[in-house]
Length: 623
Image (cartoon, rainbow, N blue to C red; front, side):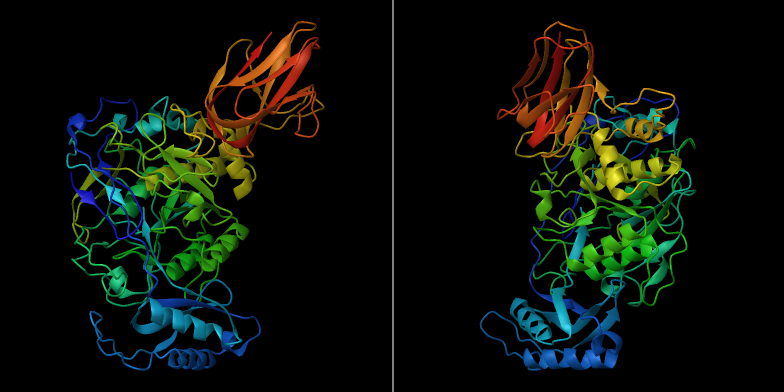
């Protein structure tokens, strides 16, 4: 197996399939594919050579670049950057440095400041302190490099096209119920921006869905283009690195050489790979349009470029760029921080702008098997955070977890099952793109996120009024399928596994008309003495069920099993709340019982409330 490791955070892999239609046999020889564990991503250093400065409203620096540069130069001088540092012990000599305004950003008040060389941690801290000493400056932070979520790839790729290997679409236990969903929506008319490494041009199985985006990378060392200019297209020309290529400016650590990942092409394929065309593999929202916004290249991508990419994708104004004429309703971000990191203010500002413009942002929870809320992007507000499940329908070993994860989708767990890769078509070039293409299997939350982004596109394509991000999150969370493997209480990964068909059914069901129908709360019906199993959710999640009772015969509602902590509230004829109910059980844990010795004939509504994250819980009504 060839293992791909980027200098940051992510997981991925690659294989080939055929026309969609009738599923074919499993990938030949898949059981012989070797696997390796993911490598740990290095922690981000505290040095830097680009900084994000926010100027206060009404200040001259906000309007006048010459005035801003005066303040920047003065701060560099006070920080001692204008003095050369001689070699001391093991530390190499450092030349004098200067700093200047690089550009204004799309987020109001923000600007990028660039030093003439990379500053170490102490120099960066001194420079930031002196920049903040200017009364015109509201905040300063290092313009950090971020990465896609790391990649793992098998060495064997079968030459017989077959969609049956896409278990993530079709498997009844762990797939997203794609086949039935396609009868309702295929994503037509919706634009999905993929903020990533870009898309390699000429993909024979990604021809009809791609529309030009933008290459937002403003450093030629990262983009591998001839200049620092941003350019139309968003095309991936490779993110390879020679040995120690990034050392000294993007990281302080030495590193091995690595080939190009073609990560954005794989992510885009899950969303909109050409489908029903008789070759290779399928995509989910294959009648949507994917728009590449290239922000990641060699050594990663700067937060300021990513922030501007979000704003531009949503149709916002970014200084120096034309306004996007095909703004994205959906934005997928399979990227993040290599270690614990709060959401940068430039990210949150950009996200809020995009939400205000009508976009919905879907993010990968991360691959560090840690608390997602402590990592960017899930540490940001107003995004849908996606964890990863494997072929077995359980949590993958790498997926981040915690209350911040909203739901999960297939990310692959090939280390547990050699059929467990997520397959899409990518270029095979080691550095730049070549004329050769092949299906590639990847695993990671990077692969899980585009399943949800595609689902969002499929829903928005058929609803009369586009859903807001909060409405979409609630829809997807309320229609998940249960995890096939109980999720430990300490590592929750959302309410369950994405079920696109269920989401579309709920989104397209006409609202109840009280003049025609007897309207009541929307609830999942319970069948007498038949348990609903595998229930899961986060703290605060509420799920509603209903039961048609007989009069006068003992009625019991019970929850049991699994892990975590739930409470049960029951009311006759109306939806209960935690403050208004006819019966409740709020013991610690999941063993809850509510009984009615003399029930009425009619409908009882049962609300399951997560006190803490829970999974593997069963609910039954007995009468």
